[in-house]
Length: 346
Image (cartoon, rainbow, N blue to C red; front, side, top):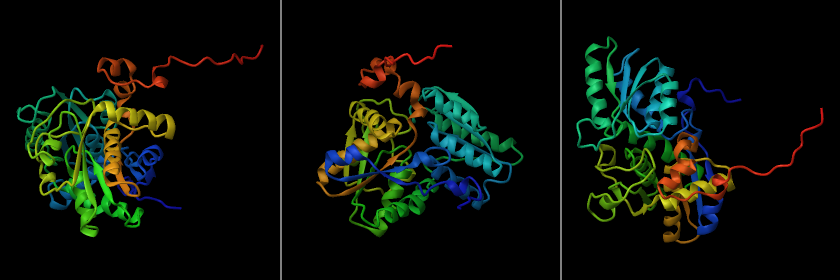
């Protein structure tokens, strides 16, 4: 029997799951790294743990101290849970536009939640910049100190994936991985996995799956940092080159509209029992495009970032989807099935 010493020890070593329909349609083996199986139910647990450990090692984070972060949700959940398990307090700043499910989970994890209007990064009241100022002010008064996690420009985020995610993928595929692709939020996952894989297998192809409203496709594929369109996905998309992205080289890139990604999410739930968030739909749609470009017989890995239940009020809400002119699967639109009456006479 395997026994973990604490919550931190249970982070990582997530399985790869073969995505049946995506593989069959492309002739490749498309594998999803099941990051929703982390304790905080997302890939961001890895970054949270690495950031906290780095801050402890540097002496910046002391016993009883406070961790402050600006996040779209999952990093905040990871920091709150890992922080609580190590005796730290957490303050999370989140754009008020994010899903209620994530806000509720942050509070449930014991963090203090601060909601701010959604503003672009150049605005001083953008949630990331606001959280940095808040951390600086709390550091002046908290007797145990306060740190700013700063996931976007803290390269402990990227290092988590160099040290753990990439080696896991190489071991699980027995070195047979031909391509890795995912979207960019902070940039830590794509840049870290790319560095870790290329250190052992330089010929591996690295791909970018970019949602509408993000400037990463424009930067890496077209050579201009520009955004087009929009997306209902949360936690992904970026308008600047963060410290975690510095030095990243992308071989293949795709701009994935919501109308392409959401049917992937709906089909996975209906046919393969995987309830995933919108970012996973973007990632898998990108993996399918990469597979078609590489040709049959290749092994491609992507990230299954978190559970779809974190976005249920939007992603699986027919009224919301129709309002956004997005596809609604028949099974979701149905009000209920006609079932026989099986009540027994009393």
